[in-house]
Image (cartoon, rainbow, N blue to C red):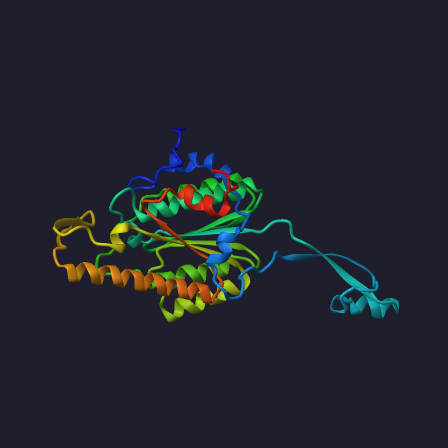
Length: 312
C-alpha cells in the first residue's frame, strides 16, 4: 500500500480508495474521544450539546441512604415490603456515525482537490480513529439521487464498507436540478440511524442548511446526539481569482468567467462571508462546534488541532 504524506492536502477530483485505506496509520495520531478546549470554544457560549452516554439497567438492590428516590423500583418495593432501587451503569462506548455529503455540489475544487475528496478523507480519518478506540462506527452518505447507510458496529469490515462507498464514482448530476433540498433528507436519515447519545460527525458544504426545514431537523438531531460539524469549502468559493478571463468547466460544459470588475470581486467575497457567518450563528445557537475545512488544508492537521495529543 502506497504511503500517504499526512502533512499535505488531499489530492485529485476522485476519491482514492487506497489512500483512504492508508489513512489508517496517520489516524493513530487522533483520539476522537478527546473533545479538547478548542472544540468546546467553537460551540459558542450557549448550552453544550453534550448529551452523555447512554445508561443500561444493571440490577435491583435494597434502598440505601443517599440513593436517588427517582430510581426506586416501586413494583419490587410493593412486592417485598422494603424499598428497593434500580441500579444502572454507564455504557462504555459511544456509537460514532459519520454523515458525509457527496452531492454534486461537493464535486468542486480549484487547486488541490474537490470538496468531495476532502470530505471523504476527513471521514476516513475519523472512522479509523473511532475503530482504534474500540468504538462502534457507522456511516451515512448522501449522493445525487440516493444514499448509503450502515448502522454503527464495532467491526473493521464496517469501516472498509464505508470507505468503499466513499470511493464509488459520483454520478453525473442533472444540470437542471438543484440539490440543496436534499440536505433535509440527509438530516432526516441521520435522525433515523443515530441512536440517542451517539457522536455524529456531519461533513458537508451545508448547501441547503439555511432552510427552515433543515434548521428544524438539525435541532431535533442535536437534542439527542453529540454533533460535530465540519464545513468543507474551496478558496475559489471565498474569493474570485485575480482580475482576468478564466475558463471554468463542470466536466461537460465550459463558460468564460470575467473577474476584471472590482465590484464583482468585493460582492462575491462579502456574500461568502455572510453565508458562513449565518452558518456559524445557526450552529452556535444549538451548541454545535463547527470546524472550517478548506481543500487547501491537510485533513490530518485540521483534526489534530482538536483530537490530537498536542505534540507537534
